[in-house]
Amino acid sequence: MANLLYLVHRMPYPPDKGDKVRSYHLLRHLQQRHRVFLGTFIDDLADEQHLDALRQLCPDLHVARIQPRWRKLASLQGLLRGEALSLAYYRDAGLMAWVRQVAAQHDIRASIVFSSTMSPFALGGLPGKPMLVDIVDVDSAKWTQYAPAHRWPLSWLYRREGLTLLAHERATALAARRSYFVTPQECELFASLAPDCRDRVTAMGNGVNASFFQPDVAVDSPFAEQELPIVFTGAMDYWPNVDGVRWFAEDMLPAIRQRYPRARFWIVGRNPTPAVQALTSDAVSVTGTVPDVRPYLKHAAAVVAPLRVARGLQNKILEGMAMAQPVVTVSSCADAIGAQADEGLCRADTVDGFVNQVCEWLANAEQRWRVGEQARRFVLDHFSWDAHLSVIDRDLAGCIQLDGAADLTSTTVAAAREVC
Image (cartoon, rainbow, N blue to C red; front, top):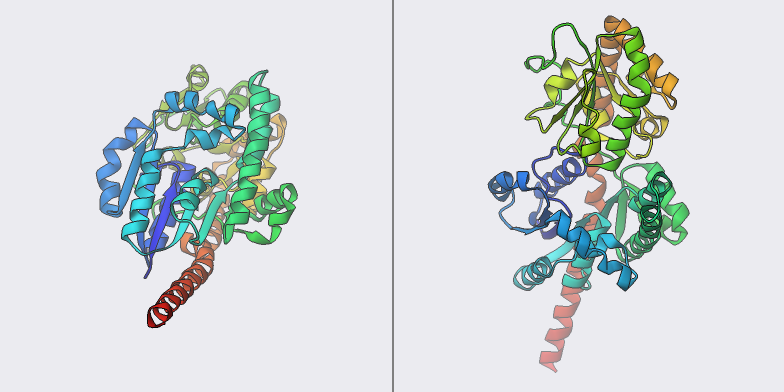
């Protein structure tokens, strides 16, 4: 057992959205063998009620609070400093002081950083100590991808953020003993953008809690008896999700309802933006936060993930598949998971493709159930959390041994000096 510092950009509890699901399971994985000191941010008032539960889960805890509106304004200082706005957004003297205090009072052997924006705390508070970084996705590429979909000045700002954040991601990967991305495709993308980091990155996939997301759970249907619910789940203040549900509601749903008038699109997830709320109609329901997404997934007539500006391994897709629902998504998201259509993952990259596949499931529930059983089997066979997160164990063991050897060398030198 070793003392580890774990730095996460968003409070990893409750595990109710993509990044929090991954950071939560990584925390639990690390705690199986080590004592973990967790430094994190809280950026949602709704999460305040869960602080006691997180403290019971991880007593060695420091939580810095963020007011997103003010932090966004403060992050504009990055324009003056020539740095990524994301770095300015997460700069926090209190968290840095806590990291240094923990380093002074405890024998911290290594740091694990979740999101490259947290690496300054590890590098500044634990100089010389081994660092492992879960970058997850190439966030810089996301900002670059957002730019063409927005008008100036946001288009310019997003392109700038892409360039400056890539420089930081590269510097972080060069400073870390190892960096991780959620899929081999993300590793290859990063290596193409930062070739000198190719040998320093590896894939560490996501998993799914298949004992929680399982189709036999006894939950009542939230839908009207006669409707055909088409379900999307996800955090609805995340721009790729916002873009996806707007694309589906505006371009696909009308054609689906021409064939199946009882079809209704359900957008299930926390913090819906005004653009998402504006989709509410006699054909679209926007739930906001729900206590449990499983009733919506279990009783759906179709599950969709039309994420045309997202990449990587999407937890929402794995959760739908674990609930024995085939999921219709774009090729880039399907490729990250690797399942085929007969294994519950249906690729559709055009409006017509989505419309035809969704209508096929609405027309043939028995076939959807049979394919859904294969979807769950695929998840059970390929997406265990412990199996994926074990990738970090070998690197962490090497860091701890190397740091221990460095400590022993320092002690031996000091003792020799005393003898002399």
